[in-house]
Image 1: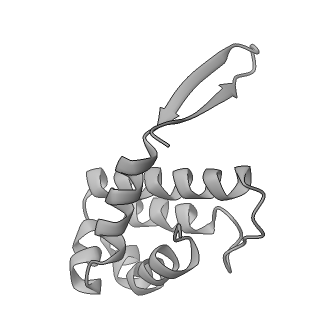
Image 2 (image 1 turned 135 degrees about the vertical axis):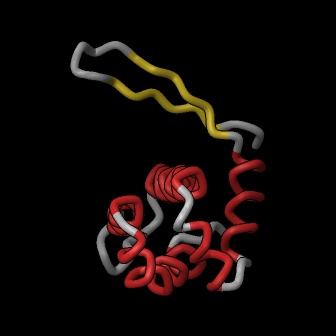
Image 3 (image 1 turned 45 degrees about the vertical axis):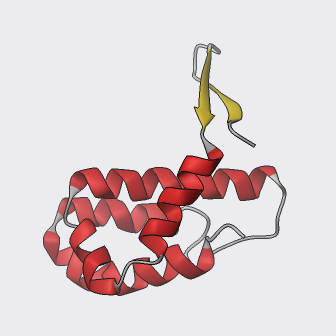
Length: 112
C-alpha cells in the first residue's frame, strides 16, 4: 500500500487530489509515538513539528474513518488537532496540554 488517494471538493466543486504515502506516514507516526514525553513536548514548541504531528493525525483519522472503524477519542475525532492549534497560539498551552496530547497521539489514534 504505497499511496492512498482521496479528493477534496471546494465550494466551486473542483477536485483537489492528494496522495498520502502510507508507509512514510506510518514511519513518522511511530517516531513521534515512541518519543519520551519531554522530547515530544519540545516538538510541540516548533511550528514545523506541530504541522507534521497535525498532518499525521489527519492522515490516521482519515484512514480510520475510511475503513469505517469504530473510533472516537475522548475529545471527538478532531479534538487532538484542536489542541495542537492551541499549542501554536502560546507556549503556555504546550505546558498545559503536552502530556494529554502525547497520550492521545500514541494511544488513542495509533494505527495497528
